Each structure stands twice: as C-alpha cells, then as structure tokens.
Image (cartoon, rainbow, N blue to C red; front, side):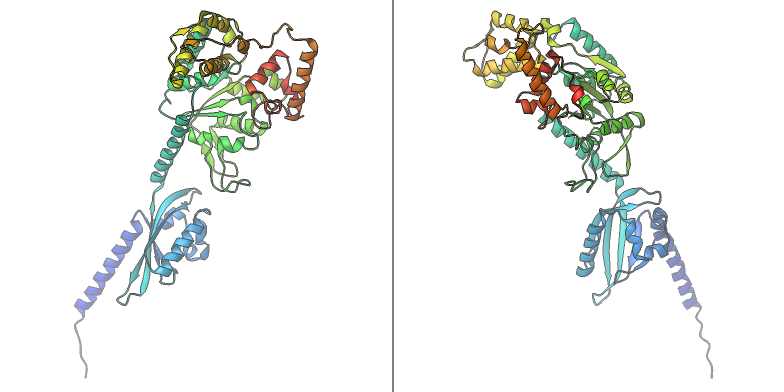
Length: 473
C-alpha cells in the first residue's frame, strides 16, 4: 500500500516563511540601532550587523565574557547592576552608558532591555537595544557648562561696571582694547594691583565675536599650586586623593568663549608647560586622563609682575611669555591719571550711597582735593575702599573723608626712618622666604604678615625687594 500526498502548498509556505525570515534578518541587521538577543539565562544569541560594524567585532567576540570591555569602565558597575536587577525581576530596564567604537572613541547610548514571555509567563528571550544619544548628551553638557558659567557670572561682583575716566592715558588703553577685541589674538594686560585689569579683559570679551559665550576668570595666585592644573584643565575620577568624580576644568567651561588668567606670573612651571601646549596646539588633557581635548578658547592674561625679570630669574618660561604677549596692554596707575579721580569719586559715592540707602547731596571740595593729591599705591581698588568706608561711617548727607586714611602711604624719598625701613624689609623678606615667594593665599607672605596682598605688593615695590629670588627657597 502506498500513498502520495501533494505538499506543494506546504513547501511554498515554508519557502515564504524562510524568505520572510531572511528579509526580517536583513532589516534587523541594517536597523541603525544596536540589537541584541539573549536567552532566558542571559547568554547572548544574536547581535545585528550594525552593532558589530560599530564595535569592529564578530559574533564570537560578543559571545565571550570579555564583551564587557566594550563598555566604558566607569559605566560597567551601573550597567551590570541594572541588568541583574532586570533579570531577577523579569521586568524591562534601561540605562545610559558609553560604548567603545572601533576607532577607539566612546559614544553615549541609551540601552533598553525587554523580556519576551510565553503563555505561562516564563521568559524565553531578552531583547536589548542601544540607541546613540551622543548628540543629546553633548547638548546637555553644553547647557550644563553654560549654566555653570552663568552662575559664576551672577555670583561675581565686578570691581565696577563701567570704565570711568577721560584721561589721555586711559583713552589710549581703551583704543588699544577696541582694536584687539574683534580678533582672536592673545592679550597680556600689565599693570599694578587694583588698576582694573579684569575690567579691561571683560570689555575686550564683550566687544569680541565670542561675547555670547562664557567669560571665565581664574586668579592663578589664589589657587594652591598643587590644584591649579585641575582647576584649569579638570581631572578624571581617581586622578588624585579626593578626586571622587570627574571635574571639568575652566578651559572646558570657557569653550567657545574667553578665559581670563589673572596673576599668570604665579603659575608653577608644570602648569606653564601645559598652558603653552594649549596656546600652541589648542589641546589639553584632564589630570589623570588620556583623552586629548580640543580648546576653542581665547586667552587673555594679566600680571602685576615684571615677567621679563621672572624669566631672567628662571621663574617664568620665555616661550610662554612670547605666546601670551602677542598684544600687550599696559594699564596706567591711578597716580598717572589723577584727572579721572573726580569722576571716579562721583561714581563710587553714588554707587555705595545707593547701596547703603543714603542720599549724598554734596561732595566736599577739600575731600576731593585730598583724594587727588594722594598717590594711591593700591590704585582704584584702594580709592573704592576709602569711599565705601567713608559712606559707612558718615552720618551727614555730605561726603567727607578722614585725612588719616590717606596719610600713611610709603614715601619713595625716605620719609620713614632708615632703621624702620630696614626692619620692615627684613620682616617682608623673611615672610617671602617662608612662603617660597608666594604673595597671596592662605600660605602666602601677605597672610603671614597680616596684610592684604595688594598692600604687600605695594610695600615690596617701595622697598625695591626682588620677590622672585625667594622662589624655591
């Protein structure tokens, strides 16, 4: 007995199914997302070609436990924890992680895991996807950096809001600033403490094509030498004791804008080398990192030091000096623009009277004469302090000052007894030796002597002390 059954339709149906499977596989392989299929125990069964091409790997490499190495080391603990939690609970999960590309760079992805269950509710497959979110993360990072910069700007009070003065010396400075502002040239602003170097730097930034981007200010003398590299260039997690997470440096926060390096002459030699690389190559690395970052930042620096003398003493690199000194601007001290004193007095009186809730109707002429006669070793900042002090103490609606406030300036021609000057020199030199020539900061000579850094700088100039000789003592 025999029978022949027509199975043409059955064969055609099987062929159709195979064609559909091939077509589905091609669709999955070409889908611009990473697709992974795992068994119920978590073993990898399938990876689409798009993911393999991104990783530069084959299926054998992906099946091996070493596939975890494709995930950024910082993201592995979080990924494994989320995955384990999802597998145990049998529920969908998602996480953000960085995945290594075949060219050695990492990109951010949003990973999702979804279980497939049978009629009895048992998991038969896990389907995972990874969607590229690098552009979104970059946008979020840009917004975050701009917010940080904005908070710094809002929290920072400028020495004064406008450039005040009509003297020829000041107008010459403003003319030079206006010429260099539209360019991307590096600017070195020189001048005594309190002359308004940061104010000029801000004015240059506001007139530049970078005005809509951040202006980040760093006082290099106020940051401990052990932390200045991290402050400027950031650090990676674990780069040093206390580095519990990645930190962005000021150069990254200033991306597309301007960074102002005040007291640049106080930078340690190691930091000078890193800054020179930024100026020459436009690139840097975070402390403890290996990733080379590009720097689209305009650098404006300032100093009250004689950098050429520092170069001669071996405290400052000559190649860095020439990179910083592309366009020099020298600010005149207030004693060289005394005709601006009345304008500044009126401005500060109005400013601080409003802040103190007082109404000043008159400024005494003798007070104005005293202020114009004084040589202002602390420059505009000292004038500002004197006026603020007067408005706090004064009760009347007339502005006046106590002459004793401006009667103690060091005289260049030896008004103080010789032994008094000798004793003062010895005290200052001893403090400079103890602080290795550092002026500002908790361990600086000014703190040891109990005086403001600006006052100490003035004393050093008047006594003609070479502070650079104490570097490295």
